[in-house]
Image 1 (cartoon, rainbow, N blue to C red):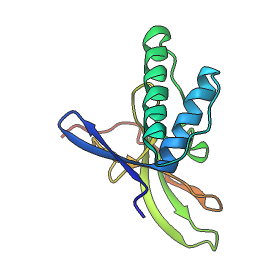
Image 2: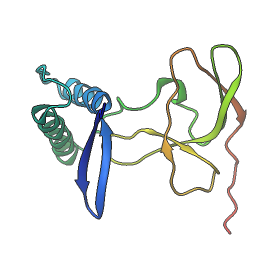
Image 3: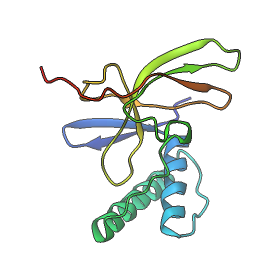
Length: 144
């Protein structure tokens, strides 16, 4: 079953899962103090409701300079520029990455391969997983 929206963006296309779009829509509307009407996931109406919430959030940021911090991973807050290891509920290490934060009006945590990486993937920590700092932020990053 296809549970992704394909969205046209500058220079190509992007995708977002129905549940991720709904979570972000609810977060933004809550941040703005607006009601969140129920709409069926996967419908054109839901995609439009998602786009509307994102537009309202962007406009609010442009008018006030405020950011919506709701998309940050609570477990990773304060660990930006640290290398972490993530462990599953049984205590097995599943992955390591440097923690960064995206820019923009609704930042998210990013998983970076190296501290000097210029791009990464959205980071997430699932319920039951634990995070341990394995290297603190370097005091200076050497330029190449």
